[in-house]
Image (cartoon, rainbow, N blue to C red; front, side, top):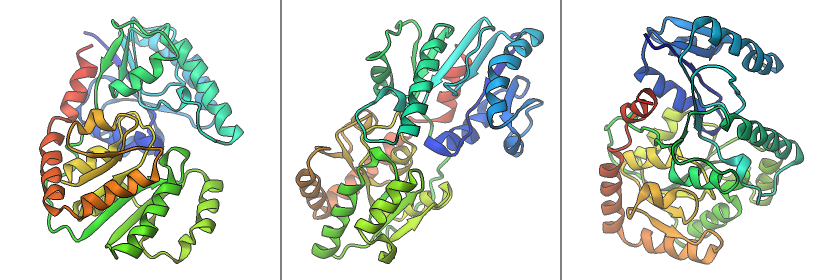
Length: 343
């Protein structure tokens, strides 16, 4: 019988935790799973658990101990969504690409984070040599990586995230506008805060801004620049269920990201019947298709004009929300699982 080993990056960053806790329930119980100690309670009936150490020990574990264990257990295939993991054994190595940060260099970020991205990029390039298949979570992520590295089409698999972890219980939509993001370089927060300041003056809309911590220096900068501590509409570090509940109450979601490989925020907003105003960057058109309103990411004037146009067109907001809900049904965790298991 074929034996598989799954190694997951279940960090709370970049939606990895959301991915892990949803895909895990669709995978076989009898295969082997490398997990963090804190994730044991998510594993259900999974029997063969291998606990990974944390910190610097984790890297030695991935690069030295795990290849020996793969040989000992006679593993036939390995799946990982951790770009740092390099496997030198196993007949089928399946690499999942969920974060394209290392392949985009046109943002102002601190040197520590830049060094980390360069290291991950180089390790990833080396990993490709040993990957039989590479799973990309959107065509955008494939195109971004392939601009830096030549990837055989025989290795390429496109597998979007599922969104059926969001239930269908949607009641009244009391909020006019919602933004969900982080203090991070690619969420274009100058435009976001300027937009909401203008909307608050011109329309007195009912809105919420949800922000998670990431870059503390960026947080300090924007907190001071836009006097965020006095804005009662800003909510900090909500968990995923709290964000989804806000989406269910919101008519329009603003998605200002310059790039994300396959953003859960976008998928979850669709499932919650939100109309989406999105930048014309990243995979936004790919995922939303013709069911979004897109603005020029480099133009605040276009962003503001498209926002006002959408707010003033209630029937279009309702129509886009309904179409997004219908379109979200094609993004299932069972489909994501099949793209892994069938390789």
